[in-house]
Image (tube, rainbow, N blue to C red; front, side, top):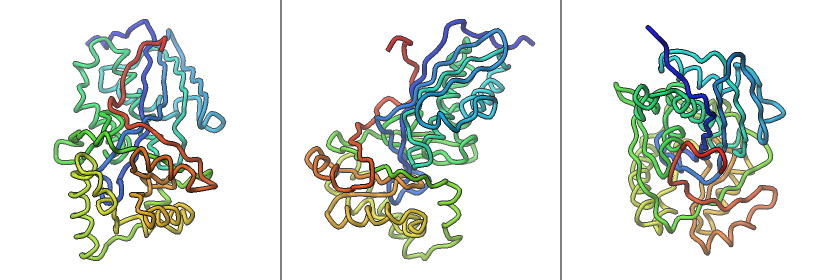
Length: 304
């Protein structure tokens, strides 16, 4: 049986940063943010070349170990076969090890690029299959769902694999991220979580997670209450004390603030007026007002 055919022209894929959990929605909620990595991929006659600029350029592998390449290989296997060669150029803007979904962005970029350079790729690997494969590679669907689909996502896994629904956040919500200079590995943060939690804490989180869907999409005035968490942030505080202190300080000022993903970045969900006030709130952090990403991972013209 013949393998797939590939496009001769290069493709460019843009993928957004994401924030998972959003407080109470542990391993379920994701929010796509207007900070992007770009990947340009071309099928070559032979070999593999990887060029990296920006975040991680000094440390990332430039061979088959690179996460974009590994993800492309997984996608090509599902698409029916590997190309003879690949040229991959990465422009990284999403900070690594900060809880903004850099690994999910790399996975999604590789999967979308592999599908885009394969003739008929969308028919061989549809959006649901792409999400399932991304979740399989990442280990959980929260960040990859938001990265692929954009907006605010609720993701889960059932017998058919990873699934998600996409909801549109209120236009009044303005994300502000506070990015520290130090990294915290996801494995380290997960290792601090207990095997069991008090029933009362689980009940609070269930109610807050349900409320957060309404607050983030239609009633942002409820975000402070809706972002309360008792399942993971306090347990992880020892790995990121400055971030935990910043979350507490912001919340004491009435600002809905959470640890972004596994941290240590802090995410504040405020409004236009509040964004201007909180940007100067945290010396020692790089503070950025971001847009909400509405498109998710997409293929763009090369000349943009």
